[in-house]
Length: 378
Image 1 (cartoon, rainbow, N blue to C red):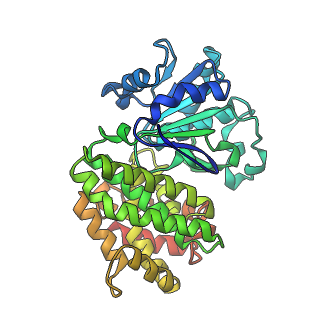
Image 2: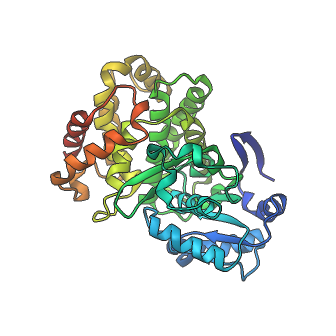
């Protein structure tokens, strides 16, 4: 039996939590769910495993065309399938991409398009109503925390990766089963794990006043920092997997407080379709240069972070996270990802306009983002 947690939404957490999916479907009156996932999870047999453990009917419809970064086009394809099978709810199974895509589908299933109408920077937050289609989230990575978050990030046809925020986009329940992350390969374990770390770091540094969120963020930071290397080194380590999933959930529970420039830049870079850049990997690359940029206004909080991470008082946090990337086999610069300096000006503009920028601890304008991105080029 899983543990029951209520904070923003209902969370069933623990090995075996997936077996409670049918019970949750019944609780929300969902009789014809659409499964939203990606082809990779189908290929490795994880979706078949979920069907078996959850007791889902074999003919339950599945949308498995979620791209690495969810897009407006894929959202519309999934919406077409949802309407075609007359589904009355959605179960998102996968990482942040599948869960974010499912949120977009749940929104458009009950709200008129186009999707951009509901983007936060377009004044769309107030336009999202409680009519959003019921959504249950089943994460198979320990990183994005989208299973308990109020946001979804979707790349539009114009390459803008925009955030859609509303408490009505929070899944009705999250089934967090660490056993479902055991097949996650080392590189994705590392990238999604640093994503969770970045949520804890940026939420804690956000200047908004929210002591409970800061406490949750620091606890998540401690758990992730202590366990990420073990989870990457030995994917079968269920204790490390459990701690990383807990950290991912905590990071997302806390980021109601707001994120910052790490995410502003990774959102902007992630919208560049010619590169197909992974969100967690981008956060890993962007964390050190943003920490350097924020250092003049964050020393007191950096001191608390060092204490939680069991680091010496004089430790440079930016260098520490650069070394973590090296230890985990992740890139340490945008140039390693093939990003050309030619995109910096456009990415800096999009970063300044991103919904995460107002809660960065140090105000940042386009010129600041240019400097941050040039630092990240390596």
